[in-house]
Length: 52
Image 1 (cartoon, rainbow, N blue to C red):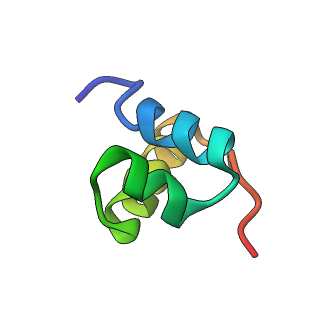
Image 2 (cartoon, one colour; image 1 turned 90 degrees about the horizontal axis):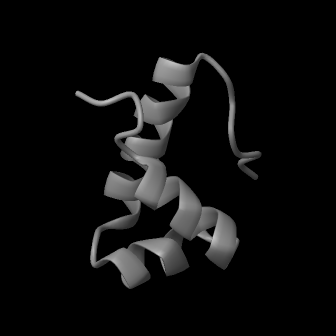
């Protein structure tokens, strides 16, 4: 597993400002996008996005 797995999902969420819009853009489920970003945050040991 690469340290950067999940970076595409993170970039899409940051650009779209929405997990669901990013998921549609990537052709993934919202939960899959959320899981990948959570894994990336775990690997980097920091929170990357503020979730509301």
